[in-house]
Length: 263
Image 1 (cartoon, rainbow, N blue to C red):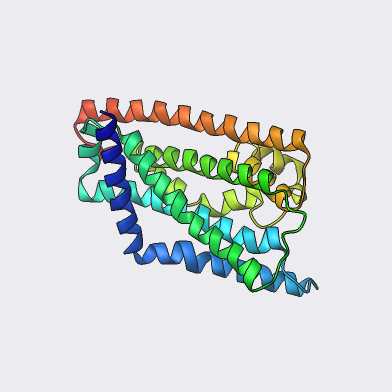
Image 2 (cartoon, rainbow, N blue to C red):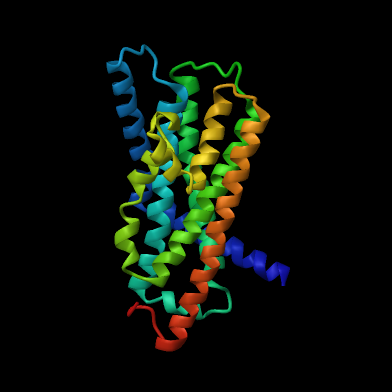
């Protein structure tokens, strides 16, 4: 059984990687768009009188933006494609649950998004000559892992959300920039008004990203980091619990109607 499950995971990962590699949209999401955001951030930084663009909130922030954009659109477009080609009902009716399929797809989408972040990091070191002296490496590493976990949980949630209702696609299309704004992808979260900071607290990405940014800036305050890590994990698990509820709704609906196109 374990071999069968690993075979399923391996096959799904290979298929998803091939689709991403051959899709022009992937190039735009994971390479061109992050470069554009970083370039705009550099221009604004230069206009503000800074000789060098900020490492965390301009260069790395552009990579995080690419990671998030790639996750949102690739995870949601997967379900849209399944619905369009008529395979969504087959996936839901198969022995392997929809959540398992989407968990594997979303994992690949998150790992593919790391390409954007890696490009931004390499550019920061090779082109701009940034020094990593004083960086809290262990804090940044743990925070990055929790950031990827948070994005994975949200990606699985969004995919199941679209499977439950095609109308939710209209809502998901508007998530890219508001989440980036609320979570402070390219600026410190503390510059937002208090009520917006409170609102962003329900998004696990905000907590993991803030911990990573502070670690890159040299913060070694363990209570601060532990609090943010705990919030990121706790809220992410809430999203996973909601995903389980959505999956139950999807299966109930398809048992009644025999198809998902009417939802």
